[in-house]
Image (cartoon, rainbow, N blue to C red; front, side, top):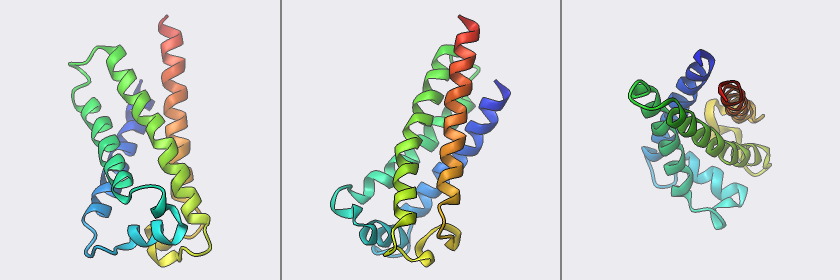
Length: 140
């Protein structure tokens, strides 16, 4: 359970901060808008969905960690499982955006063109899902 909490803590802070950073972009055409527009996704996915999704997932993970003593073990696992699962399509989208030639490195986090950050977050979310599934099987 310690590994789940550590991974969840990292994911919660990372997702929440990336979401807030995108929401507080200094201009209406901030770097997240440029990413979505240049990748062609702005026509299919509302930009606010990505921002709200990251903030909600980060908040859910953080809240589950803060009140885990008051949650039944089953509820804690369910919240972490659902939040970790929600990270997967977000990071798949981020990987797609990073790989688009029209998206310049200047508008990406840390100005890194290869999708290292989204792949890392996706692997952490998958690890969390695996550990929760294994923990659930062990307790049954």
